[in-house]
Image 1: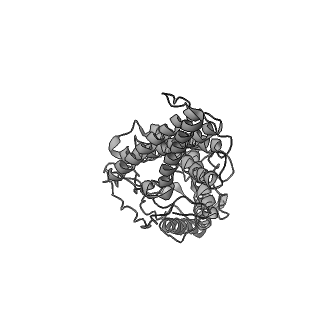
Image 2: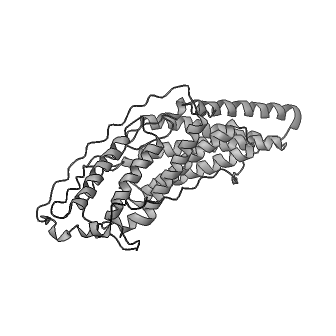
Length: 379
């Protein structure tokens, strides 16, 4: 599904040494710090490793977070925070505000699952950790609620796209496909709405993507709803539904061009070059022509002026975020090791001299070449 989904840049981060000389007062405490440094480095290296699979990524993530847990939560399973909670600052770039193909069934399932997990992680951060920040997230920064909401909803929408592709491949009932497409279009509309009050300079490209996907899946919804109406001998209404589908497909095509020409953060998806996109155009055209022929020979029904209202509800295939939980605290963390961190020996910050913000270099992401004629085909 290369170049089908829009992606904001990977977040770059400043190195963290976890060197707490004087604070870590025993070899065991120092080993925790060394393990944290190496596990974080290994995890970051996997972000740009094309050979990395989800299992390797999960193992590396669990290894790092199991160690980091000792810096976040109390070891006695209480709701108290660790005494080390604020010992280390982390610096990340913001995804929006700069630096101060054909898939197999198994791959489709992995994409679907990964997107649901991602939605769950964003949701977990929003509900459990962002509210605990000492300094609230600034407007338009990655941890600000409107951006987090957009990420959650976009992950759900993109996972649902895999469901739709699967339903089409298996020739499921057109009514179900129409309902799923309608729900997916609504997801994209909600994600776009979450960004609508943010500075357009940073969000315009992302919003173009969300808008084009909303139009694309609205076109899908009207197309398959038209098939449902035709099967119910409502040929006039079917024609009007297909005409509306044609209109939204044309909007999606125009937005693909606008999106490709728009400057902004992130990779540029190329959905109009995918077979999955082009097949919808042919399907709408052929189905509309079929409806018009049958209306001229059999039904002789009047075509309504207004498009049918889509009040479709999918009973199956709707995506919910997978609940996320941190891995258990690493077994190396014990009350004795925690007690070996003496915060009174921390170097004092020289707050009288403000330090200039260092600019982090962006992550060099691998250049994945799309196969132009591949689509969202699931074998």
